[in-house]
Image 1 (tube, protein in one colour):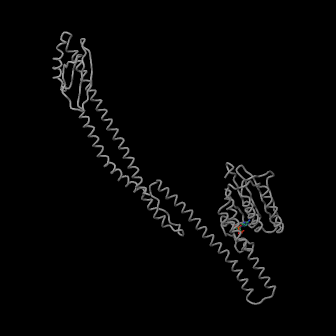
Image 2 (cartoon, protein in one colour):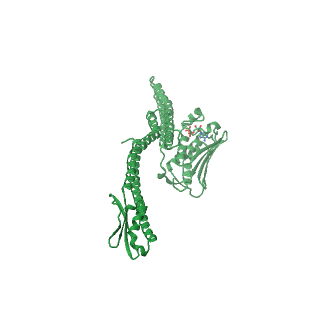
Image 3 (cartoon, protein in one colour):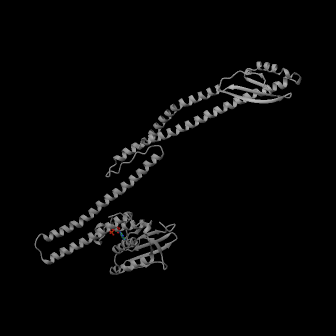
Length: 441
Ligand code: ADP
């Protein structure tokens, strides 16, 4: 395939050639027509001149002097020799000179004093042919020069405008998968090419961000796994160091089970996060009745709250609250919020779940009377692996992934999950689910 700049030049050159050929032919044809028409008009004038002359200069009495008068008239006319006049009997009254061909002739007949006269004026077409030939010569020889000039200029212009593309290609080739920090040069002119470069840079930015996020996530996940793995190994190594009683082995194995369960939970959360990167597409959302979903989950978790002596209060509208959603996702999200409220609220506390419908959607708020979240930590609790107080939270079994998963799910529903809290009084997590404007996401 030819390079774009050459293809552009060739196609414009071809079009220009066609345009020149068509306009050249039109000019030549038109010129020939106009010149011939003008010659005809001049010949007609001449013939009318002869008629007018005879009408004015002769009378019925002097009719037989007509040949003489005509000869005199011819003498006064510069081109007089070119006119023939005959009477109705075919007698020649005035004989014009012979004209070399190509010649053009016009005829006219008129009656005078009972006699019919035939006149004929002729002129050479040679000057017309010469003028047309000159123009044709000019067009035929100037066209290739014009074509060459415009072709070269066109090639130069397209090369110049495509130069940034070469530069972008060079830089794009040098961007490796592991180094997404380079950006394409954006040409200063605000045109298609600079927009293309900007679009590429935005895409690189997004790739870079998600790549960095992935790297950090992998590093954090590995870090999280290292601690329980180390405890597993140490527990086993200690137990194996010397022969022990059955009871001691039993305790060691129980600890192994506890640690493995924790690791299992972590693996589950990591899986949920990975799945959240590709959330359930809106087309497969199903109709979910939020009031019964909230009531159902609360009922399932109620025994755990009772066990910790916590009051769980559920406040949902009486009527049905339909919403198109990924039902499993929403359930997981609500479990994270209720589980946190359960984990972080001291005994005798109170947890409230409120479902409300508004004109533009639904909101579910989970409030507790727990320790609250310090202001500076509030914006980070949705980050993966973030825990307000790692030492305290370690005992409660969290990995700092629950809220990250919950927010991911909220976003997959075009919704929002936000937290507000007063230290010492409690926290509220509010999920807002907007209704789609047209009922379809
Ligand atoms: P975890 O598994 O540690 O609970 P989350 O992502 O669910 O992870 O929560 C992140 C951190 O936010 C928790 O470690 C905890 O410090 C804080 N947090 C979450 N919910 C509450 C709450 N209801 N009250 C107080 N602190 C909370």
